[in-house]
Length: 417
Length: 171
Image 1: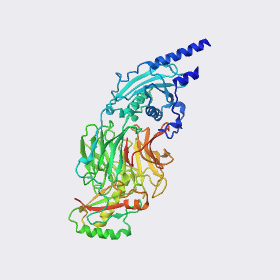
Image 2: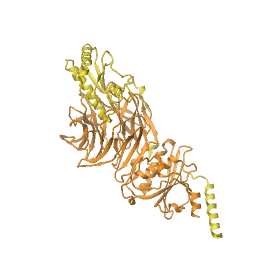
Image 3: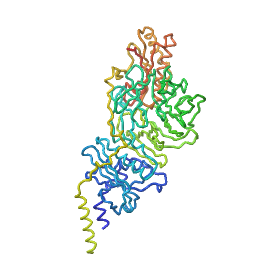
Image 4: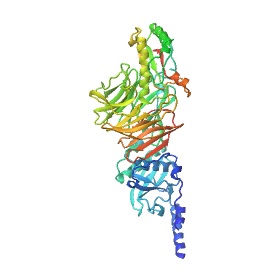
C-alpha cells in the first residue's frame, strides 16, 4: 500500500548529485538547528528550473535542510504523503508561465497538514519568475520567524567585457537565472548600487576624454553626471544613507581615495600615497575605511580614519591581497596564493575583522575573486573559476553552507550586490 | 484483504478526482505588493548614441608616438624602452595639441587595482617626458586597466603587448 502511494504520488526526479545548480555543498554547522522541509510541485507543467531555484533559496538561507527530491503531487489538499512525514514542513507550490509568471505557495506542517501560510504571486514578465520564487521563500522564512533573508530578493549588478574597449552592465537575480543588459555600447565599468532600494546605480563611463561617474535611475533612465577625473574614477562604496561616496580618483595622476559629499559636491582626500590606494570601503560606524594599497611593496589591506591619522595594516597574511569588501567590522579579502605570472592563479577568500587579527578561510580551491557581502553581512558572493568553468558562489557565514551557480558570461570586470 | 482492496481503490479514485480538478487560480488577490522594484521594468541604454567616444580603436599609439611596454605587475620604465621614450620626447616637443597618455594592463589583475596599475604606468611615462622640460599640464592621463587589450591570445608575447602605455594627441 505504502509503495503504491509512493509510486503514484511522489515521482523523484532529482537526487542531490544530479542537481546541477549546486556544484558544491558543504555542511559544517549542526544540521539539527535547521528545519527539515520538502517541496511538492502541484503545477500542471512541472519545471525543473523552478524547483532548482526553490531548493537553492532554501539551502542558502541557512535555516532549512531541504529534501532534494522533486516531489510531484496535489496542490490543494492538506494531505502529506507518508514519505514526507519525517519533515517539519512541506511547501506545496504551483507555477504557471503561460502568460507572465504566476506562483502559488502553501506552507504546511508535515505532521498533520495544517496550513501555516498561503500566498499567490504574479508578475507580467515571465523572465522574472526567479524573483517571484525568491520572494515566496523570503516570505516563508519570515513567517517561520527566522532572521531575514531579504538579500535573496536583490539584483546583482555586474559589468562584463564584450570586446577590447567595450563592456556591458547587466542585472541578474542572485542565481543568475534572470539576466538583463541595462547599459551597452562603449566602455562602462564599476557598477555600484546607489541606494538600498536598488533604484539607482553609479557607474564609470569612458565616453568622454576623462573617466566620468554617472548615476542612472534604472527604471526611468534619468542619468546624472556626478564627477570626472583624470587617470581613473571608481565609486568604491556608498554609505548607508546614500549621502556620501568613497571614490578612487586621480585628479593629480595619483590614485587615492576620496570621500565625496553628494549634497555639497565637495570631496575630502582620505589617503595620500605615491603608490596605489584603491578599493575603499566604509567600516565600523563609517568613520573609518579599509582599502587596498601597495605601500608595503605588495597589495594588502589597510585601514585609517576618514578624519586623518595613521594608516594601519589589517591583514598579516598573504603577499598579494588585492581586493576586499566590508560590512560593519567584517572584512573579506581575496588573496593570490600562487605566483604564476602567465596563467591561472589560485585566489582564495578570507574573512577577518577590524577589531581582530583572526582570519578564517572562506574558500580553499580555484580562483575566487570579487567578494561582496550581502546587505546584512551574512552571506558572501564571489566569482569562482576552476579551469575553464566559471561560477557565481555564495557562502553563508553562519551556516557555512555554500552554493555555486554556473556563470556563462564573458570576462567579468566588476560586481555589486 | 477486501478491506485493503477497498482502501486502495478509494485512494486511487480520490487521486484521479484530484487530477481532474481545474488548475488553481494562481493570480489570486494576494499578489505581491511589497516588491514593486521587481515588477517595474528596468531600462536598456545604448551608450553608442552618446557622442563619438568609442574606445574600440584605441589599440596602439598614434600621431607618431611609440608604445612603452612594462614587466609583469611593474610600473617602472625598463632600460630597453629608452629608445622609444627618446623618440616620444622628440614627438612631444613638437606636438601642437595636448598629449593623451593611456595606461593598460594584462588580464591578470583584478578589479580596481589593475586600473591603478595602468595609471601608474601612464604616470611613469608622463614623469619621464616632463623630466625633459615638457609642461605636465600639456599631458592628460587615463587608465584603461585590462579593458583595452590589443591581443587576446594566451601567450606571454600577447600579455607583454597588453602591458603598455599608448600615447596620442588629443583630438
